[in-house]
Amino acid sequence: MSYRAWFAAQDDAEERYPLTDVVYYSRSGGLLEVQHDMAELRTRSASEWKQLFEQRWMRTRWPYGSGVWGKKEWVCPTVADENVVSMFEGGTNLFWAERLGRELGVDDLWIKLCGNSHTGSFKDLGMTVLISVVKQMIADGKPIRAVACASTGDTSAALAAYGAAAGIPTIVFLPKGKVSTAQLVQPIAHGALVLALDTDFDGCMKVVRAVTSDVENGIYLANSLNSLRIEGQKTVGIEICQQFDWEVPDWIVIPGGNLGNTAALGKGMQMMYELGLIDRLPRIVCAQAENANPLYRAYRTGFTEYTPIQAQNTAASAIQIGDPVSINRAIRILQQFDGIVEQASEQELADASALADRTGAYTCPHTGVALAATMKLVRNGTIKRSDRVIVVSTAHGLKFSRFKVDYHEHMLREVSSSYANPPVELPPDIDAVRRVIEERMELGVQ
Ligand SMILES: *Cc1c(COP(=O)(O)O)cnc(C)c1O
Image (spheres, rainbow, N blue to C red):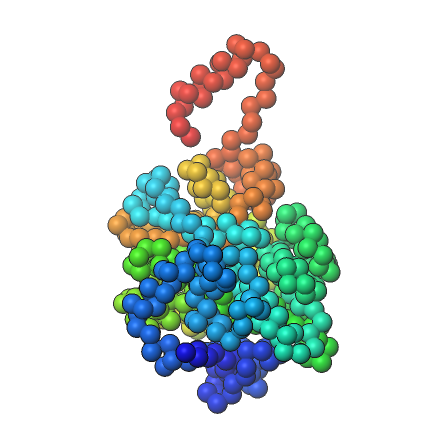
């Protein structure tokens, strides 16, 4: 069976390009979307698709054991298997946040640990698709010399790792001093050309767009305005349903910056719905940092007005974006999913992250934003106690050790650390140690 997909313009059904063309915008200047031949996909029934996805799930047959490539027909059917560049991304575990849920007042709260992935964030889901298509293009004789991206840290880590695995040169543009040490060292270690620019993410984005605008130059753009990334990222929602035996949760909460992932989450859900694998849609919550909240501001106007902003510093550095590339497609998805946009202050995101850590999770600040948004919606009665809620955890907490250390040492800006647990410094004196232990035991579990 031959499944097909292509780039399509939003406003002109006739305007199409192969996925291996170097093209990012339609003639009218809008972003392209990947479209699939849905008629062909419908020739398999919903239960046949489920069965196929189950058979492949986490198995060893290349490349179908990957959570992304196990759904290859839905993601990128046009890449030859031998050109797939995969590190078995996806298939990340769901953490039943039972104790945290009890504290918040939700019985069925889960955290999808997308950070338990090769480069420590959910950006691997999209990057495997983009780099695989690039490998296909090179195999087809296209003159691609390097792949480039602007990044708040995680995209560049993923690009550099997948590029290195495939032997494709990579160039990353980072806002100087605005990414964590762990994020900075990843592309360095993978041999990328790392350009630290004295600007913010939006400034880096402008530079990379300029550098990749000349198609003849052979530098291919890896940011999520390139819709190939969306195709991989969209598997997160499909996986969540699969992990619940194809039951649809009531809510999925996801942190948003450039907003490609909010759009992708919805796209995966829609595809399942259209092909009959699920019979209803969840509600989507996009959570933004108050210091970088252009979508939240637009939401407050009922999406009638949108203005890019200058993003302020936030501990949730991966979503410190004031002019999101995927604003339009994210708004479209939120409207279709009865969506909500919520925001979290630095205080709220840091405390939410710390509170979750106390119940055994280990959350990055962006996950803290999503958790803080969830708490607000529980408190105001929007999310009900019996609802099933999935919080998408987008990066591994270990990538943000500075954030955690600063929190527990009361060193975070704009934050008074309600749940700080600094180490107790003592002389090696048995009585003093016993006293401290007894004091703590009286307080009970923290
Ligand atoms: C990229 C990223 C996000 C946000 O995704 P967007 O598509 O930019 O909205 C959230 N959290 C982390 C850790 C990320 O790396």
